[in-house]
Length: 378
Image (tube, rainbow, N blue to C red; front, top):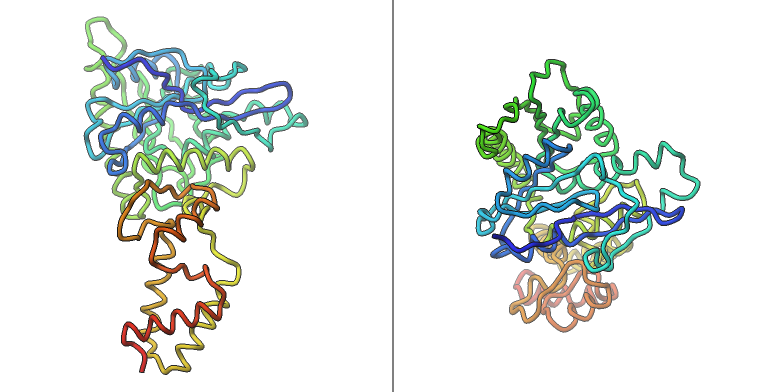
């Protein structure tokens, strides 16, 4: 049986008039228990509901202990897929206790607690009530491949669909992939569901057999699991085409960065590309450096093709986090290191030169010398 752990993924709580977000240890534990988190690319389903949602979670994660969450969401990995290239992560959000006034356990919440600056003591009651929906739309939706909402867990099917529409309203996905939606109910839901096509992909209804002691949970939810896996496959292909299929290690780091961003502001949305350059920012005067370099190339009669090839190569190397393109790796690097750490590692570990690391004159001389070494100067 898997060891008992705290699967809480994200906490949202109020202290006095202030609201806070904090990382739970759930995603960190999932990452640590994978075989090769740097080379495994998980897919995540988010289950939303109450009793039926919890029953589905237990069916998808047999053998795991299921404790009551104190956070907005929980996340666990299907142990049978922990060695696969694409592990299955099961996240859940209980609509009854998604936002609790309880503070997260000190030993499990970690040190990353962030005050929600846009939800202050002047916030209206409606803004406070929409806190969870905002966090789901702005944060969790970025890390979820499939959203599975259990309509029977709401007062009515319409209320469940409206909950989905509300947090989709706060979503802002600019990437080339979209989460799939599965509507689960024990009866046929005949009304047409209208969701923002810029946020969600395909919508699939699933008819769930009525709970019966004669039916094993694994059999009752077997169709749902097949639909989840096929939907994940579709999203995974879209992520791969858009170059946004992230490893478990990077998902963990991205989530911490996204949580910090969402706590600071609702807009603009979190940008994965900009997050990778936190320790390697693009200088405002990059255009000037490129212009000077082009001037030197023109003065030395370098062909247009050679100039563009060299610039493209330098820009591609610059796009990597510092140290990723060096010959030998002697220490683990993170694209979310502090600026000073990144600068020190860049100076000591890589033989390539960042385009924006030197003054324009020295940069041009270095590039001129490099061009001569490459035998592209005339």
